[in-house]
Length: 224
Image 1 (tube, one colour):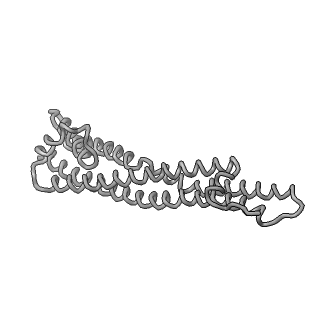
Image 2 (tube, rainbow, N blue to C red):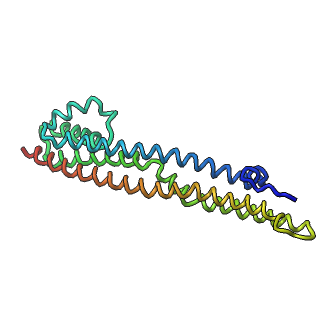
Image 3 (cartoon, rainbow, N blue to C red):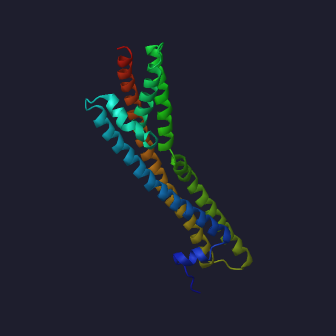
């Protein structure tokens, strides 16, 4: 008796539970790849924006002029530009008070920049938790499908008098497909999570360094 062990046949003839596991893993894999490409674009754009802003900021131009150019688009700004506008806005507002203390002015600007920094990092870290979850759980979901498929394959042998490899091979093969799909979903997610987490950490360091350098500039201006 010829047993069809083609990939498509194994999937269509698999048990309902194994098919559901495969469908879940396929859906998760597609969603994971979508987030991987989107996150790649987001981080690349964030790096480009940081480089462009730093070039403008350290070009030697007047910071007040730079602020006037950026402030009308405050709601659209991201990254270092957003941190800069948030800090300079608060610095200007506090400094206009007649009895303002220079240290209080700088500390207020720093708090405003910290809030902006926190929001930027929250945006950059979006979907990283999902990639981590996919990378850590997909192999176990695939393993569940494998165990279930193998269990059904051996249960089927209980109703025959003479067991052969041909009888159990399709069940084992379809079960192993679930494990393969679990790994296919997990491996790219783990690689992307590690890569993007490192990129986010480097951007956070870059943002934090700028915040400290800009705070030093504001400190000098507050005491002028």
